[in-house]
Image (cartoon, rainbow over all chains, first blue to last red; front, side, top):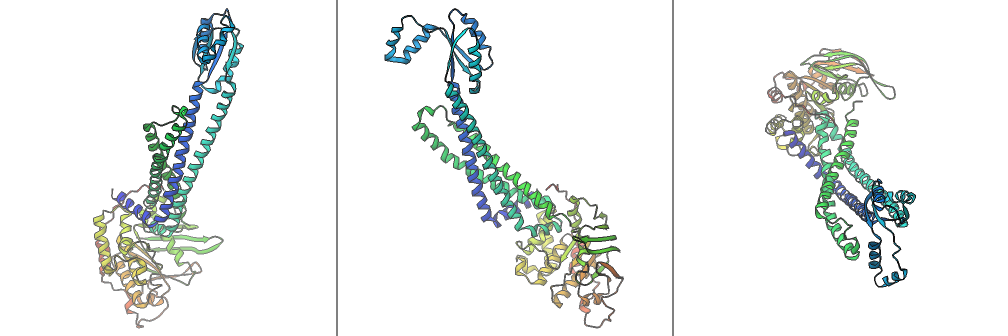
Length: 296
Length: 265
């Protein structure tokens, strides 16, 4: 307890004595963690939007006349990528088509008998499974035709891959830059006090006693930076979401706007900031102390 | 604390031999001068005792510690039993006199109340009460040296290493510093002091170890720097065997308790 008191006091001295450097670190850590947070939220929203679109993607499989619809239904349902299946009778299909066509549905009367066969509306688990499933369905003897939004599937699939990669790159960049800034600050702080550290070690202070205030300083600065970043996210994210939903109403259900989710995310970000600060400070202090205290 | 050098050679890169095959023993409670020209190996000799350096060959032991084979984590505990006074004082410039002295006890997790009492005690003993809240830069050389001595005394060490403690001081201040060192020795503490100052060495008639080119060329029980007679006005530098307040501060200091710190960093 006594040691903790001394260590905390020494950390306070460090922060006060190097306040300019500390302030710069705080600002940089806050900006980088804000970018990190916004990038993560952006990619989460893109993922959400894409999975929403994926859930809307359906495959329409038309059954050959004379086939046993029950049997075909069981056969399709047994396929692994199939998430949900709904069968439509010819009459139901025609009604749906008429509803979609609205005033132009009179054109359908010219066709005489209902030409639409029994068909299935199939939902898949993942967008990447659409193409293989279509090939499997087309190969089935009971299936006459398969209709799906092929181009849309390919584009969504490609967009999903690109957005994941971009988000990952942004995430790694933000983490690396934040880590480097904290690492450098603590290193400069240590370097400017290297003589002092040597004296402390010479008069009997343990390496842990000397190092702990520096590690705590790095952790505190990164944690405070993360708290500022959380404040920045609260001030920018919610207005941004509101703006998007106002201008693009179809996005309403796809964007993450639940306050509880965002609060949880912010708690994670603050914890991540503190952990990052601790890891960087620990690494630089351990390395520095090892070189300073090594006998010649 | 007893010190033993056995066949100690220290070579610095690239092939600079600072000490060659040193064999000697310093007994508990001795006062030893280490003399020699610049570059003779005096500082290397002392830095081997403080474990800032490791011998290239041979072994150095101090008390129950084998300094060569010592674990890194044990070094601070050994150093707490060694008072160190250097020519450049080695004070922390950002801390006050009080904080510089208190620090060595705080590092051992000594409670604040005890730290405060003991720090004030040693500050008073070295006559710096009025300067206790000043930073080292605000003090004269002699005062800074007295702070360094007070800091070394704070832990009541059993070995006192002084590397040219009077090197930057005028005659009168050097005389004050020497009086403090003699009184520390009078309290039973082993003192090893390097110096260039022949007046100091000649005045006190203590054991003298002389180094030249890294070799031990002389080890006399009460040699003096040169074979000079006394009566040259050096009485002020001679030891007074009556323990001074500083010596009493050493002997009356609360004994340390070993405090276990994890030493992972």
